[in-house]
Amino acid sequence: MRTLEIIGFKRANLDSAALNEIRDSGNVPCVVYGPGIPEQVHFYSPAILFRDLIYTPDVHLVELNIEGRIIKAVLKEAQFHPVSETLLHADFMAYTEDKAIKFEIPVKIEGSSPGMAKGGKMEFKTRRLKVKGLAKNLPDFIVADISNLDLGKSFKVGELKAEGYEILTSPNVSIVTIGIPRALRGKKGE
Figure 1: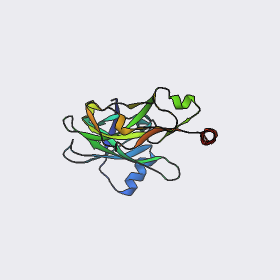
Figure 2: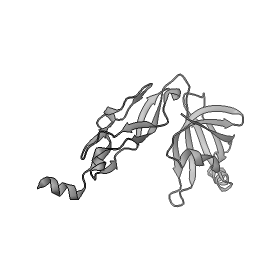
Figure 3: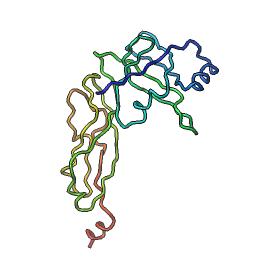
């Protein structure tokens, strides 16, 4: 899995006036916590550094560089302004290389479905799956091969093969379905 570096600076003042000042200067207040570090660290980082982390379908591990201290983490939560949709706050969870972490990995569809060749429409049901494993074993994406899907059929989580990690999403959840168009539904009934 790819790693992205976020450079941060410690913050001592945790009151709302200090937070507004940080946001007004183009930075994002953040916190990192978890089993990878002994105590939580409050810091801020330039908002521009979050572009490749948040505004992308890809997932990344994060290497936080807080005034020279390197902390390996994952983005746990991002909070946005309800109107302007600007990033207001980011929570990171620190991890260690020897303990499994839970993460959401995007699904990538491969192959061409015979059902789509007959006029069916591909309908995404789930775009990300919850997984658990060591950070070094987590993939950039999980591949779902739809080469055998005919009209009205679904590709379910249980059909995936996971190597080096565990898929936590229920095996009965559909990832993609090949929908039957209305015009073809009428012909089947006749």
